[in-house]
Image 1 (tube, rainbow, N blue to C red):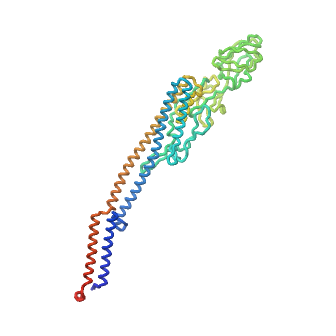
Image 2: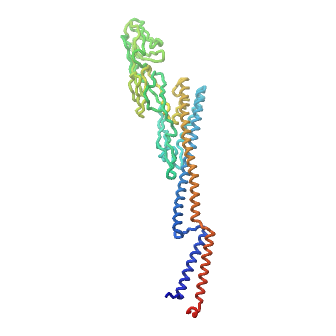
Image 3: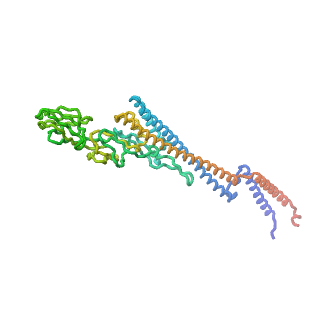
Amino acid sequence: MFRATAFSIGSRAIQYSQMHNATLLQYQEQISSGLRLQRSSDDPISFRQVTSLRSRMSELAADQRSISTTKSILSTSTVNVQEYADLINRAKSLALQGVQALDETERNAIALEVDGLLSSLKNIASTQFDGNYVFAGRKADVRPFDFNAPQIAGRSLEVAYSGSDRNSRAFVGESVSIDTFYDGQYVFSAPDRGSTVLLGPSGAVAGSGTDSMTGRATLSVIHRATTYSGASGIQPGTGSAGNDTVIGNAGKHAVHIDDESGDGSWGWITLNNGAPVRYTNTDDNLEVKGASGESVFVDTTSMTAGYNGVIDVVASGDLSVDGGTTTVAIDFSTNQVVTDPSTGGFVNVDSTSIRLAADNYLEFPGTADAFQVLFELSEDLKNTRGLGSNQYAESLNRRVGELERMSDHAFHVLGEQSTSLRTLEVLGLRIDELELSVETQLSEIQSTDIPEAVLRMENSRQLLEYTYAATATISSIGLLNFLR
């Protein structure tokens, strides 16, 4: 039989006092801190829910930080693309003014403003955000554009792109990705190759093949050698090679010789119905010009006595797009390929009608980037190629067309970025809602229900007091009552 001793009664009293004190302290902590869960042992199941919800809150906070950073990058890029679009539209307006400009001074003043726009565009293309280049794609730590290459006369502005051809992407959550650092080549160019334009007096025209050269270049038609048919005795002069400007097979050029002396000592020579030039048998490098400004240098020291008549002039030549370093012989065909060894690009030339050695100007519409278009606009306004009034106006109109294409593309990029920004704003609002929902759940699980906690704390206090009272009563029982 179990016997209640003073020791057992005291032990039980201490045990229940400690239990009720601990419970009382627990509810006091909950009320003072406002948190129902202080440690995992308070409620293991609820504590696990709280841990999961806190982890979710951390994920949502990370997504918000990613959205904030991405929005900042995109906002910087969008502002600069908008400036780029405004700049292009201003350049288009200046090009139209250039078409209507009345004198060289006015055109040069317009060109000076275009040069300023080009300088501003270079600064836009080098924009940075937090030390990274906005228009370098995935190579955001690398300066995207280099404009320091030597400028070759007659060529487009040399622009080297060192960035990535892929946009950098930021990932928000598990399924949303947004372009951030854009490929600069994509932003500042709008490839749409048109028909090649060939300007110049040589007679060369654009061939029928698809060209691969870009921007603009100079097509040099170079004289090599001249020969004369018949028995007139006329020969190429000592300065003929490289200085004659006639090019062509038999039938394109002719000289008329009239030996008035009858013994070959002197007479008259006419080239292509030009002004007659007097010759003597002592001339070994006499220049004779044709009606269109073409010329030949002739040697008349061995003229046939009494010769009067017309003879064909045959002149060979070469084509080059690198200033004569690399050449291809003119074969007077409908499609000759001339290659630029420095870039590997090539152009197709119809050489059937070539008749003069001269520099010609090539344009490859739709292949220049925005920097090159502005540079070419400035060059055209200054008329560095010496174009006639009609060709000058046509050239500026082509620049207007290219600037319109650039403007359309800039607004297309701006639309892409605006859509991305809108997506980020909507996503940010959604994450705000999720954060609020998670916070509400956390509050419901973790926060103290004050009325309930007060009630339970009061109940524990009463139990503690009852324990003290019961223990005191039991401890005061007399020996006789206890033995009963």
